[in-house]
Image 1 (cartoon, rainbow, N blue to C red):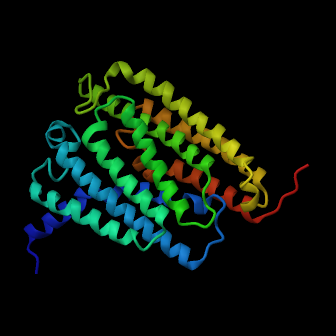
Image 2: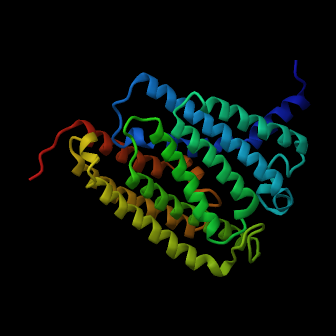
Image 3: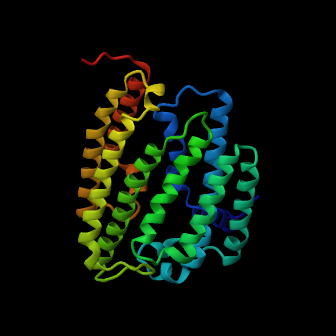
Length: 305
């Protein structure tokens, strides 16, 4: 039987893989909920396998990121509690576990379509590029974060027959560029409360707060505009019986963006907005409404005059 010390290390090892970030990988299911519901059982199995693969790749990338950021994490008011920064795990665990997770994930990817394999490899390489080089580059870091979210959607499309839509990818790209900017804003706000003027390991300073707000809100509203273009794209008619119903999603997105940016400016979002959204009941209500609208648009024919 495992003793208490070993159990503690196993729990720390599990936490080091950041399981609470699993929510981000549900983006692979986005095409499934936006008009591509008519799929086979094999396709569904592939999507769940793809979801597992991205969880493994993301965990591997997080482990490497924590090893690289170790010294900065030790000085951060919140990140110092991470297993490696807190000394709960030896660095050798991360050095061994990270490549094992990535290799296992990439081996599983060979059982899926080639486009998915390309997306998986691309995601992992971009994640490593972010950790080693880009994270300290102002504006470029948030752009790459948005791209990483978009790659997840592309991977989901690769598992669906005729599932590719450039407008949907651009929609996700601009929406998550807004959330990446919000993340930096929230981090700056938290650091300001600690009487610090810059982010450890980042290129942002308190003087960037207004720029982050402006660009973040603008990008979010542009994502809604792109979604409207998506509604009128040629492909939508093949997947929705009442595509004009999707217009109702636009005010939901607008309200949600206003909500989450308001909370950020009030200092109620301390770090990752995606993780915050998972725990925010208001966001769940908005999400449920949007999914309901998408399902109605897919299955129920409405006459518009």
